[in-house]
Length: 511
Image 1 (cartoon, rainbow, N blue to C red):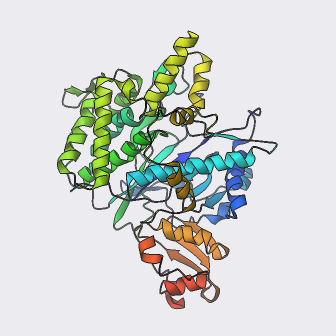
Image 2: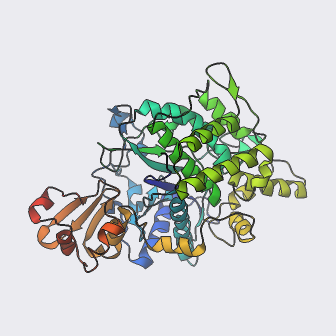
Image 3: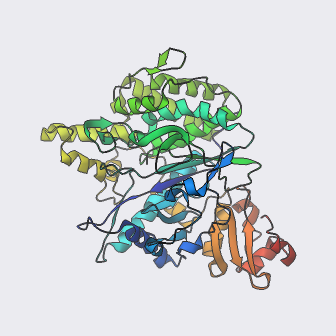
């Protein structure tokens, strides 16, 4: 039976500005942002603190490695470049087991691994508080910085919000591609963030559903910052490669409305379950890229998307087919029921009156807000004030961000509480190896040399320098380790408690 339960995580690159200084160095400011969070909390921050030894960003799921000479510099994340900019690189593992670092001149928060969409919403939103804490720390400085949870500056630049899901390695990658492309092309109507302007540089007046759709140029590919593909082929599981594939999803917007985030991750997890079971609907778009752009540009949701068999379907009809298939094969656990119910609620609302979902979907909330402002001021969609309102929707500061003001006024639904999100900033999810990573930075920090998703590098006394592999995401969790490590307070004692002797330490014993 299908379930939403699977290892998943989010990545958010925050938009950044230094007020009054358009010529500010974004690499430098991004490092200042990360360090502003790390410093007051005693967290280690440096380029070398992240363990790159097991990373392989040029591995392609289609069965080959991209040649380093053919790769764009932005793809060489495992090979930090020697340049004047490297002084600004920063890597932090936060108290909750997340990664907070500088990526492509943006501060990025990568959530800890979670097992349910509801926990994903909580820990994704915890990242917003981490970003807010950075802004607050820099407010009194000579160079304050503002952060925005968005994906484009409307001047031709786009930056990513990515999703990660562990998938059964035995599933053929071609099956993932064929099952996911129609879903990803149409999913934006459920979880688009909306954007003023059509085209990469907003060269055509108007408003569209997705902030990212116009920036995609390929159906399948390894790149993430150029020739962006609908399905990304990076084969870097950060886990046992014999068991797992990590689906790295780059086609998606930074959602702030919690119902949209819940459905974004929950529906995708269910569709992956369909594909793993060989049950995905058989839909083939005639031109996926054109359909992607057409869906984003059509606020009426009525555009018929041509299929390869000569027929056509709307985005709503395609998503309904996926929902029906998931409903037919789903289990009865509460998390799965919640996602299926919310998914159907959004489909029904979009089919009858999209404006009724201004409390649940960002593009609708923003559209309603902007239309009201446009009518009040009697201005057209190409007026620069509307672009400013668009950006202000995403400001992480509650007193400035229009999303936060709507939410505080009760006009945006929540699935979390302030208390749950605050707790998620301080502590890791219970069910994954993020718990052990969190312990490493909060309890064993003095001995922690480096960390990554699937390893800890420890200076452990008589053991010497030890890389502790964590290739199984479901180990290293609270249930397995809390009692076992209750009285453990240094790295040497940690290794003994885990049953690692000095000989096996040299062979990188798995947790």
